[in-house]
Image 1: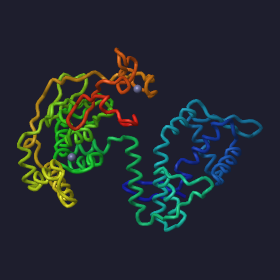
Image 2: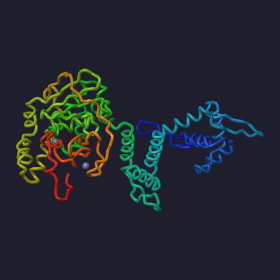
Image 3: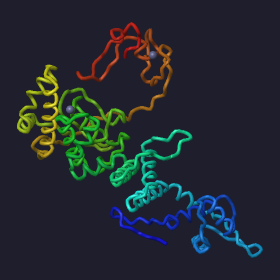
Length: 411
Ligand SMILES: [Zn+2]
Ligand SMILES: [Zn+2]
């Protein structure tokens, strides 16, 4: 019997023997070799612990034969079935589509958990969540968690689905938010990496949403493979708004940091002649002061002078939050100038070989080996002399010799 319930705007078939599991089990049995209808029923029973009826197995076999997935051969009045090439292809496709299948199972269990108040089901849901979060029961322990999920199970099922969607498309939520110009959502997601709300990151969020929407849809779907490039001209809070919303980051080499100290970012797509540069207009400070008058005085006290107590720090955080959420409600034109530019982009990041430095024994990118002089063939750290680093002041040269501590372990 098949029952169908309305669940989250989707129909979910809850009779699992009818959802395709029987079909899959049968295909699985035949993939291992030729089998009669009786053999198949026996094997399905041993695999699933449930005896399928002849009334479900034989019609399915006939259907699969009609589809060309299997072919039958009769001997001594018994028919033996085997997978055809088409059938093997189909099995391969099923394996490909397993994520959707697993999602359906999760949904079915979540639905059952909501429908029936059953301790066994609560425990199963709980196990599913633990597994999903990477908690595995210790060896020899029953796969049973003690905490029932109860009223939160609905929320958790939604979170499950969200995680599955993000696994398919990690930028999906940002893409939707940018397309909808849902800047509040972008700001919240940015703060997940930035750590706080502030006018700077809000401006970075806005500049990115503005620039990317101007550049066109292709830029929004960036997958961090250096097709879309961002050239950011400041290493401040602004840069995190850019990294989060555009997906161009230090790690994926789609972010270029140009050490100019200007509140501006250029977005460009490789292969196109033009990109867009978005810069913050100087009077943005007035808008911040208007939204949160205490922001700049507290900035002075808490950050610049490193004075102020816990209360000041809390008030500063709050002022930053107020200012950030006020800024994102303003029209882009009030805060930014945007212009088409001919971008000067570096080449794709080279894929460098790794070599072992004879000094420290660590693996280093071959392109970072010192080319000549006394330290030839060694990493910059071992060779001594100067190297560069990005820090609060921008890109600065650092002298390795000054850095060395007596223990030699400080980097
Ligand atoms: Zn910030
Ligand atoms: Zn070294």
